[in-house]
Amino acid sequence: MSETLKRINKYLSEVGYCSRREADKLIDAGRVTINGVVPEMGTKIGPNDDVHVDGKLIKNTKDDFVYLAFNKPVGIVCTTDTRVEKDNIIDFIKYPKRIFPIGRLDKPSEGLILLTDDGDIVNKILRASNNHEKEYIVTVDKPISQTFIKRMSGGIYLKELDRTTKKCDVNRIDSNTFSIILTQGLNRQIRRMCEYLTYEVQTLKRVRIMNISLDIPVGEYRELTSEEFKELSKLLEDSTKVYQSKLSSQKQKK
Image 1 (tube, rainbow, N blue to C red):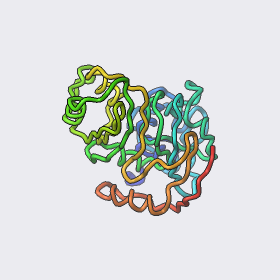
Image 2 (tube, rainbow, N blue to C red):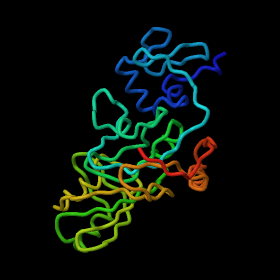
Image 3 (cartoon, one colour):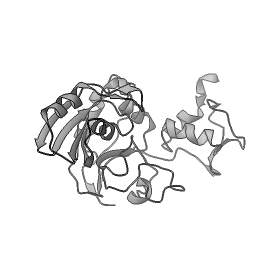
């Protein structure tokens, strides 16, 4: 009997409602009930339990997982809390199924972000120990020096986070523009690194997540292709099994 039980955050993730991290926030806020009772964090449920979020019954009704690549515009916030943030990514895309972003991009930033209803893949991609690459193109307010490139790539201690950034690949594109490939995702990491070196970020665009490259106009999304998902699965194969989904390469607009 106990083998059929699973933690409530895992259940909400597996049925595609939200990621485990978001589920924990919902539980902590008292917005989740199990059989009419607000649960404690870590509570387990069985197949006959009724789970509600904000009074709405949550069921696993999806036939297949969705994996989207979206070119986020500046000004859109990567949150699923549509009640609090009017410029949220969910309302902007208006996708017919409930999805959520894998990670985030700051409101002033633009570029590639992945969205899905597969909660398990979120943890695999975001797990820092997996060292998954994310590439950015950044423009700053003054000419880039060789010292800047060396310091950015070598690691910078960020006092406000009490963390030293990992070594990374930084290359100058033109006088005020550089590319940077990160394998970690500290809060406002690139902006904080630049600020430490007395540079101010003017524009910041993410152009790649692992094997997925940005190839669509701002404000539009598309499904991952079968080839992209196959390669993504290979890159994640050291983690638990990735759900094999039917995917198409047809571009879609918001």
